[in-house]
Length: 285
Image (cartoon, helix red, strand yellow):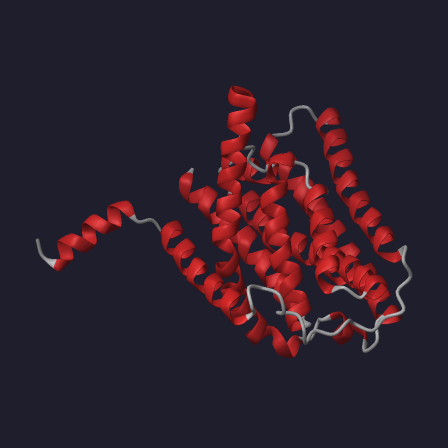
């Protein structure tokens, strides 16, 4: 058996997910060794100076919830008044409204940040000059956390089936269901824009930029701020089965924000993760 045949046989057993997980595991072990098992990785991070009132992040969160609720309401009303409307057009309308609502929330948050953060958007972590550095670092950070997210997902499925047996199933996100159920290209493009661009930007502005900053400003504990904002990030999502994996992913997002001081980094991580999820679902369909 020559080398080429050995490689072909290995390719039948080793998947891309295995390679990413192995790479991430090696990087994670290296990070643990460099940071004394994760005890002092944020020793040099500094809080973001701001005069943000305690209620501001909650107001922004309610505005975002309002945009999502309005999307659901308008879509339901349209389906009721136009029962012959094709399902894909209804889904397209819902995503279009969500995009517009998300853009509106971004504008409101940016206006508030300019008022309450020292150095405005740069103090918030939005500096165009760091795009190239943060985009590359985002890929590396995501590889770091990928094996943990994968492991937590598998454990959730295992214990869910062990406890609930046949009653447990791993739900697919409603957006991904729409993408696989309808072949229309305009809908797929709009869903990709919504999921991989609009939603990550809004959610990172909310949960990392506002909530995490607010908690750290009041408690002056970086890891406490990361944990609390990650817990909130997880529980606002609809599917409870996804909460453990979302919490782990959010911890990575929060850490990258505190470590780099740039909000662009968690935005890129979140966006790449969502885009990879979409591509995986489309390839598996």
